[in-house]
Length: 216
Image (cartoon, rainbow, N blue to C red; front, top):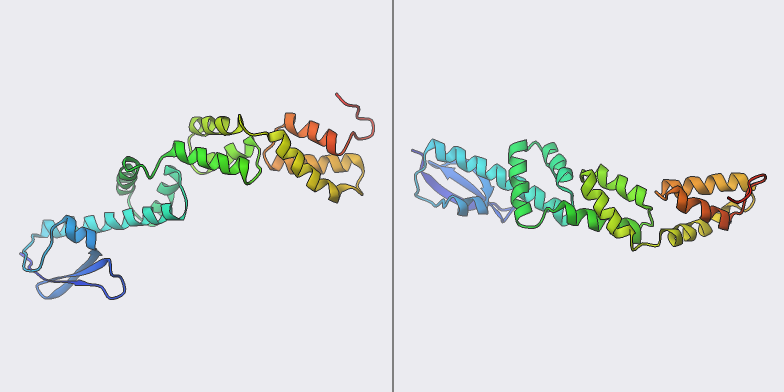
């Protein structure tokens, strides 16, 4: 059976160790793997143990990659899954890591959806339709996204936000015919995700009515 002759700290990565078997470099791994498998110099290990250690090292890398993503910003589970798969971790291992992170409270689609919907409403000045689309794009299931958007936007004055955006845009539309200005303003607000029942009264207020278009 192979003998662990040395376990050395890697010079460029202090959290990683180089493991030598029978005097030759065998593999590198995170120090957490050393602790988990209780590896020490002078210990003999079987080929099966070596295989399990290497698998554990890959899983630790997958876990670390997931944590790096979470340090950048919150992620939906499906979004993280897709990013980790692109790094060539297996689907089974990735799901196992994500299950662990969910148990630790780091992956929670309900919290993620709530946070992203709040960001859309309060800082990005998006309407509820766009907030919903963005959540679906990030892999949040439709019902979870719907609940989060409804909760956030029931306390959001979408009409006031749309009015503010329209008033800023109106300055650049003053030289246009009213109907043209209305179309452009409607397009801007629609791209922002505001619904018709918000868009129309705001345009009527800011631009007025086009020729031959009386108020409803």
